[in-house]
Length: 128
Image (cartoon, rainbow, N blue to C red; front, side):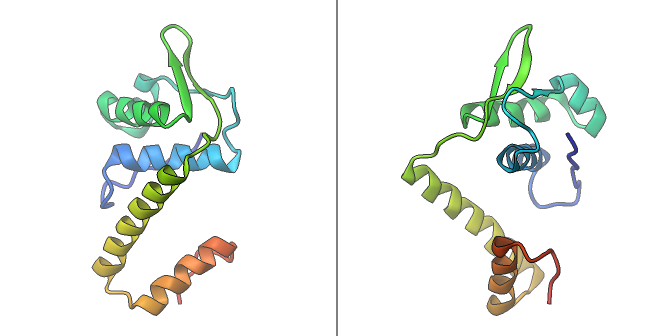
């Protein structure tokens, strides 16, 4: 599992970690049954506090992505099924975060929407 934490990012480290692990599960890079590193090990690897990793794992577990059991560690459950209202809430949350970033960067609306469209249709990371 490869994740990176950007200390200069607007999102707090636990949110960066949560988002990256969820994305790895959704993409299939982390399949159901895959064992994740222990909280202590991942905290050491990423130079984070154990509480930061524990919070990310807890949120992923409550969202249905992970299962943690004492003595058995943390494993991937898979991509959870979301109810319609949960999808709407997550979409609104992502839109708020993106809008905040767009405003901070001073990007105009057309460029911001074009960047989103490129990501959705899978045409790369580049900005124009």
